[in-house]
Image (cartoon, rainbow, N blue to C red; front, side):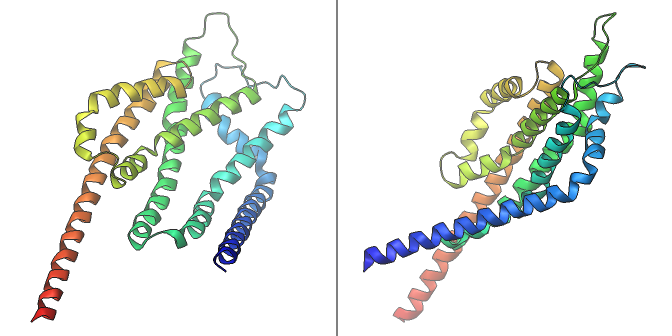
Length: 261
């Protein structure tokens, strides 16, 4: 009977996982189809930071015959996924929530919301700060006599890598909070390892961004500041956790005392 219950429970989880995946795919497709009409406008918006820094008379080019068609559609699909992130996170929350304890639910729900906000913030920082500075630097450093004509597919791949790198990098506070909450490290240990963290973020910036000092520095500095923010948030959460545990202990002691009286 126990084996049958376990088998039924597993099938229920698999069925719920299937429904979650179908809902997620459906939402992404609906948003994609809603944005397809604006595919060229979206690509023009994405290319604006580069176009603004190109020399007079220069323009972007398409070296592949199908690139003018596929590049905007690829961008539209990526935008549909980004727009769907809050819904996707909500689906993840619905799926894992039944298996969490009450204290874990109180932590996970805010973290899911915060993680999506931080990811969007990383993408926005890359678009409005990093890309104009980086593209301006690239165009100014071009040798004399070289005509800048960037391929639209290469540009899209380049920008998506930048967006992904900065979006993931801005999740550092979430990772720090989870590590401290799980007891893997403590805020004091993280503060003691600050010199190694600074070296590490510059190394990560070198690996995740194109080979230019501007992009690497503009990724490394926010990562370091976000690490410090994660340490502060972890210390605050752990302090509240200890206070709640002390209050619960005192309440239990008072209840036991009343029962003994």
